[in-house]
Amino acid sequence: MSLVDGWSGRVDLPIEASTLRWHQWVRAAEGATAPGVAVLGFACDEGVRRNHGRAGAAEGPAALRRMLSNLPVLNAAPLFDAGTITCADGELEAAQTRYADAMAALLDAGHFAVGLGGGHEIAFASYQGLAKHLGARRPRVAIVNIDAHFDLRKQDQASSGTPFLQAIEHARALGLPLDYLVYGISAAANTRVLFDTANQLDVHYVRDDQLGLLELPQRITQLREKLADVDLIYLTIDIDGLPHAMAPGVSAPAARGVPMEVVEPLLDAIAATGKLKLMDVAELSPPLDRDNVTARVAARLIHRVADAVVRAS
Ligand SMILES: N=CN[C@@H](CCC(=O)O)C(=O)O
Ligand SMILES: [Mn+2]
Ligand SMILES: [Mn+2]
Image (cartoon, rainbow, N blue to C red):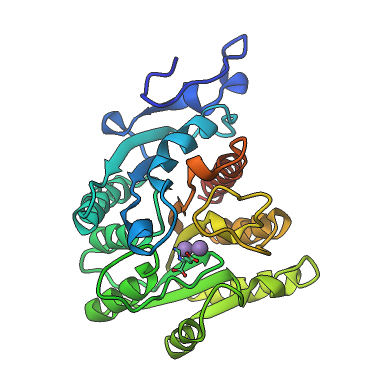
């Protein structure tokens, strides 16, 4: 049994540093005395519901903790859990604000913050947390999104389909330089107006059918170039950017998707910059999952990026 709610798993003997798993290593964030990796849940379905999707993402944080529990501890960095922000029906914006406040506190404490979604409305909450943390500072920020969708919808109401347009407009109002890069865009899952919006906003996007292994070296070179002038990075992984077979547990599965052998090197390149300050995983919908495969994939990506960030720091 772990010291922190929601974490439990296998215990290997003898109990020593080399046999530990995350459920044995994680501690409550409020007791943190040193910076480390800190997870923060966002149990929210409201954005997906408003976007006419299939419910279930609110169960994401609990499923991710279960899957992260048994993963091995790879480094000596402390691991913290800052709990979960919940979202009652209809109060999406208030929940995003609460999440942003909690996220800003984690960033203020020097943690690498890992958001456990929740629908992709977590992204505007994470971005707002970063903006709060920055205060009057104006570094150049990049949001890198792995996603089949742009999520640049122009709508009266915030939803899981609007977070990056919201972030871009918010950053413009603040005078915060913000680049938005998306990897995995599906030509079959975004209408022309979304491509037009992306082009008008100078979004850097790469389609799923342009992200095979053959193109990977040039894509990584291009990504490194795009991130060279950036001061800090927020990475968001919409798990529906992966192939349906590996990520069935999502509201809007990808007919093609970007395979793990391409996603992981892209994530490695982002972490290796040393500029990655926060990440989140969105759109995991446990009721739609099959044998926890989607949660397992999401947990693996978090585990990999968190270790790479620690090593790059
Ligand atoms: N965050 C999800 N966004 C997608 C959902 C697409 C769908 O439900 O088919 C979008 O709004 O484009
Ligand atoms: Mn998506
Ligand atoms: Mn998305």
